Length: 145
Image (cartoon, rainbow, N blue to C red; front, side):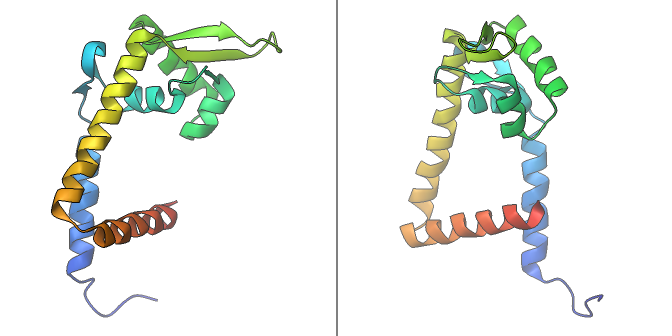
């Protein structure tokens, strides 16, 4: 069914938000001593985290990309000395990816960006408004899948 009413102001605001997010996803940023990283690079670093490491297959699943895409990005991050490959202690065929010290620094810098964002939210909105905002984002994320 085609709606007969105009989409409304909210639809235009959402469109502008999506446009802004797309713009941010194209712009490399500096993350501490790791230097300038693309959004794909920092998202992979974030997915790996500072724990003991992650299997390549788990990383692909977490990011929703192919193992081939993960392999290419891991090679790029290895050349920047941000990640390292290691063997799995129980499965000689499996490869574990972990962050180097510089990779962990980038991870912490990325966490700081998120923390600053939430600090700004808490200055601009009440806790109740933030809770509504977070619920809206969860619902929008589900709708866009």
